[in-house]
Image (cartoon, rainbow, N blue to C red):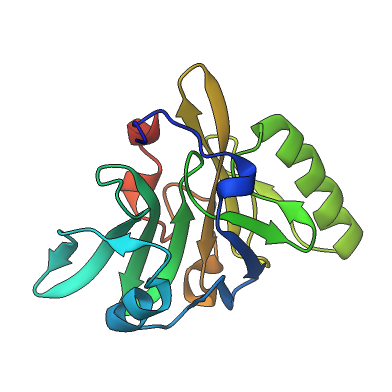
Length: 184
């Protein structure tokens, strides 16, 4: 039984690849809610409650089977289309960018690898107001999440429509809930 602080072993995580600004794993930016649920069927289960505004799904959490209250993934929609995927550091899928693992790592180690990766491939690198490294060209912001006494990486992956200033707390499109310390 998974608890709120259980970290899933690397070998037990679902393995996904990031296609920057296009999608991650079976998810493609621009998908409708029903398509997201269908794409995740067999891997993750949708929450019983989504955040809705005027009948439109704005965000939803997905769980590992048989582990309610322990979200593995949070997705956000804009105009009913998938625009943001946030992977839980403790139990979310392992997402790789080329050969670099983005989930559940020590933030300082991932940041060093990410700095090298962006410099080698000619991508922009920016740090947000909270010191989170990210790249608008990749649609990636590397956040952190507490796992008991350890802090692990929690990537935020966005569609092109949300990439501009994606690491900017005040001017970017990533919802405020992702910047708050609710993941600590």
